Length: 92
Image 1: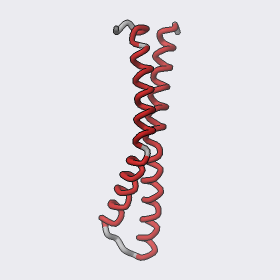
Image 2 (image 1 turned 90 degrees about the vertical axis):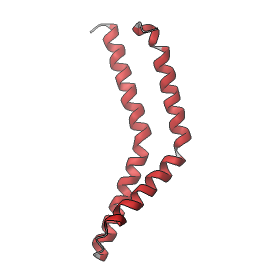
Image 3 (image 1 turned 60 degrees about the vertical axis):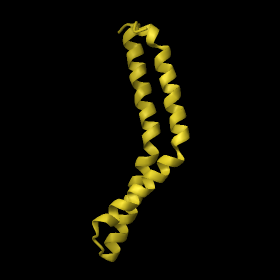
Image 4 (image 1 turned 30 degrees about the vertical axis):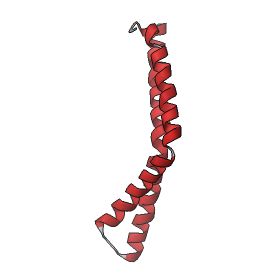
């Protein structure tokens, strides 16, 4: 493998890591709220469809809004790194 292949692999690794860091908080909160609502539904025998969907949507929305500024900062720095490497890939 030459240097170009290693740069592509590093770029893909950086992309996956950035995606994981940005998406994980909302996914974890959605999972946690979903488990709590399912447990509540199992204990009370309430099988309402909206009861499982609405709390998860609200929790994910709140977490996304709270973490929007740090997520945008991560995405901005990732974009700067990508644009700075355009010359190396011969695209500038």
